[in-house]
Amino acid sequence: MDEESNEEALKKEEEPKEAAETVEEAESEEKTEEISEEEKKEEIAEETAETAIEEEMEEEMAATVEKAKPPAREEKAEEEEIIEERIYTIPLGKAWIKPPNKRAPKAMRIIRNFVTRHMKLEAKKESEEEAPKRLIINNEVNERIWKRGIEKPSRNIRIRAAKDKEGNVTVYLAEGD
Image (cartoon, rainbow, N blue to C red):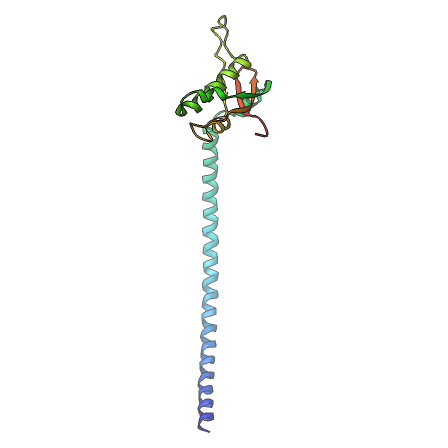
């Protein structure tokens, strides 16, 4: 019986604590509701102020960006219409005659000379006043030659040479390579 009475006494002690806890919880909830309403009003005021400031900053940034923009490059891309386009397989075996540490640069010179000759890029002596025509080798072609290092360039390479209105020639890797 002593055990049962101890258990009953413990239960009685717990019940008032629970009641006290609920009263405290109710009071704290009321305070949090009051605080949360005030905080919500403050947060809304802060957010509107922040958004107004952000909008002003975005407008200023947009204005400065518009001023700082270089002329549109789309016009330049439209001007560079391809007049002539050819696909070549260039043999690079002669680059292997050179010492090992000079083979990849020799392969690049072979490509440059081949494209200059076959796309008729050489400037005529009569028209000295005209701007010189340029040969542009795409980075992918360069990477393909140097892929295995300076000592072991490819034995041949397939390229696509495109000539634009101005006479400049751009060399790309042929599709599928």
